[in-house]
Length: 127
Image 1 (tube, helix red, strand yellow):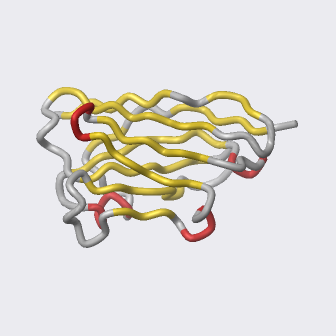
Image 2 (cartoon, rainbow, N blue to C red):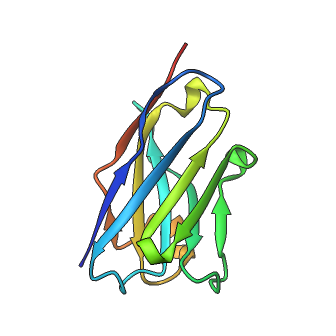
């Protein structure tokens, strides 16, 4: 089993930045892709980004089209940690952000079929 713990959420003003972290613990050999989803009130959970652990995945990195240029995903294997850098935040980015991980490639993670999920961290953007 793999446990995931997100951190880094908070309240910011429009235009500011946040970096979310997701630390994997437990059997840390059992993931090769980590992803980020978000869910805003009254809306379905949506994929944000994903990143391959070793860069050899068919989809080594992914950011959903509407967020490209503002959001970026990265991974530090030595720390078993994935990051989501979020720049120029907007009120529509208000959501709970979830980390997910899987051992079957990033396509499955992006499709929401990761094996493991974190509890989520709140991101609030308002002036």
